[in-house]
Length: 539
Image (cartoon, rainbow, N blue to C red):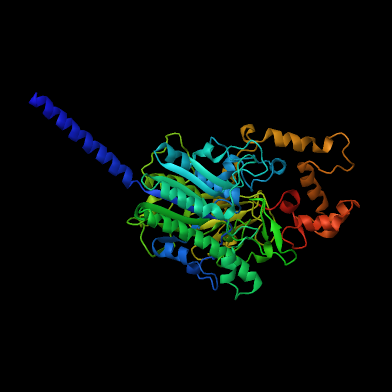
C-alpha cells in the first residue's frame, strides 16, 4: 500500500510539473498587437522630423523599440496592401490590385469582391495555435455595399467590430476602435492573444474629435484639421499602450505600428466636406490632406517610395532593441506572417507557400539582408510624374519601376537615392534587363480570371441587368461598369489618362447637367478626371 501511495504521489507531482511547464510555456508566448493606420505618411511622425505634427505616443513606441526605415507595403492603396499584410502573399495572387469597391466596379476592374476566405492568414494560424484573436477597426477586405461577403470570423478572428465589412456586417463607429481594443486586452490578459487594431486615421473624410481640434486652434485651418486627425490616431495608440501596461502584459507583447500606404493627395479647396465609402460618415474633405511622405517621391496610388514606404515601429521588450533606427534591413508586409509566427513559435503548415521571409532575426536586433525580391503591381491611377509605373521590383538595393509592357523604365539605387530622383537606367543596362525579366516573369504567374467563389453573384447580376430593365430610360440611368471604362477610353482623346471638362462634355453628346456631374466625379477637385475617378469612387 505504501508503494501504491508513493506511486500516486509521484504521479501527482509529475502531473503538476507538466501542467506548470505547459502553463509557463503558454505564458511566455508573446501577445501580438498590430496597429495599422490608413494613409499615414512616412513623414507624419514627429520622430521622423515633421515640423508641426506631434505624435508623442508613437515617439514613445519608437524610443522603446526599433524604428525600421526601410519597410514597404505591397500596394499603394488600402485593400491590396491589407491583403498582403494578412496573408503573407502578394495581393495580385488573389487578383486584388486596387481597393475593393462595389461589385459592379470590381467587375469593371477584373477583381473579386472579397479576399478569398480560404487564403492563409496570420490570425488563423495563431488561432489554431491556441491564441485568442480579434480584429477591430477598418476591414476593407471587401466593401460595405457587397452582399454575401465572408465575415472576419471566416479568416480566423474570434472577435471583431469593423467598418467597411460586407453589407450584412454591422458597422462599428470609427472612434470605437481603440476602446474595443482596450476591452479585448483587459478580458484576455491571462492568455496569449493576437489583435489587429486598424485605425481610420488619416483616411478621408477627416472626422477629428472636438478636443483635438481645440488643441490645434493656433494653426491655420488646413493644418489644424490634419493635425487634429493625427492627434486622434496617436491618442488611440496611446490608449492601447496604456491598456497593455494596466493588464500587466506590456513586457510580453509585440506591438507594431505601420500604415497601409502613403499620404493622400491634397485637393483644392472647393468642397470642405466629403462622405466616405469606408464607413458611410461625413467629414472634412481632401483639402485638409496635407500628409507627408518625408520627402519620398510620390504618395498614395504611386509605386514610388512615397506610396509604398511607410512607418514601421516595433516594440518587443527584451527582444527588439530600444531606441534604435534600423536603416539597412529591408522589410515588407508579406514578411509579417512568417516573422510573427516564428516569434510566437507558431508552426506554419507544410503546404503554406508565402512570398515573405522570416526576418525574426531583424526584430531581435541582428543585421539581416533579405534574399527574396519584392514585386508590386498597380492598375489604378496613371499620370505624370509619379503614377505612371504599372509594375515595380526591388532586389537588393536596386528598384526598377516600369510600364506593363516594359517600354518605359526607371532604375534607382535606394541606398544613395532614397527619394528616387536620379534615374540611372541608361548607366546600368544589365541591371535593367535582369530586373525587367524578373518583373515580367512574376507578372506571368498572376491570375487573369476571377475565382467565382470570391464574387457576389447577387450584386453582379443586378448590375448586369440594371441597364436592360423594362421601361429603363434612354439613355439608361445606370450603365454597366464595363461601359464606363470603355467610355473613358473613348473620351480621352489625347490619351493622357485624364478627362478635361471639354473632353467629358464632348464625349457625353449633350447629355444634361454635365458640369455638375463632372464635379461629382472629380473627387479631389483638381479640375480633371482620372480613370479611377470616372470608373469607380476613390478608396
